[in-house]
Image: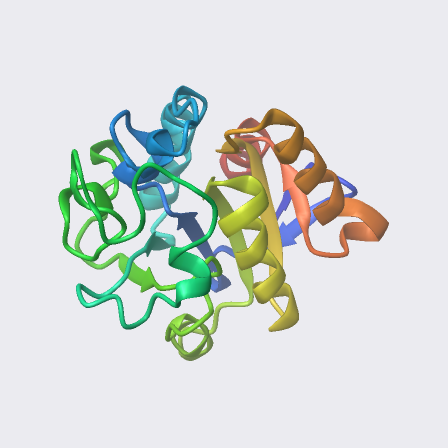
Length: 222
């Protein structure tokens, strides 16, 4: 059993029953020229967390832990992308449109791939999700249940949208969740701060938070 010095109190987990879940670290969100930038966002905030995510991923792999990568990805015919999602706001490019990295948020396109530094390795799970949450319209819950997973450690983007949605979905399904604060980011600093505070409020109502350093220190001490 490993206990991380988390907030609002220690987060204890058994490595064999815990998965590292990396949310949507894909080129369309993180790199210049992708969907995130087309919305007018400064993607450098998201790019900046890649080294911390890589340190955690390397340590997790070395320990033999389970790794899950998610991508927000739609079918080429956009049958799984409702108008309420595609038509939201007034972006320069919409889901399915052709951008500098291919069609926006379409499975298999260059921009839909995980950034090279965090690319999945053989044996790691890759989950394409048509919604914001990792559990909506995917087989993730069934796969985790069959693997005996009870705890999830989250990294990825963006904090207040896909990460928070996935953590809330996980909490509703009975998983204990830890979010690594320096391994998640938002295009809007205030949104990240608010999301983190909401998730760990009222005795970790959604989950715990800690830094990557606190997790790595706990793993080294076990």
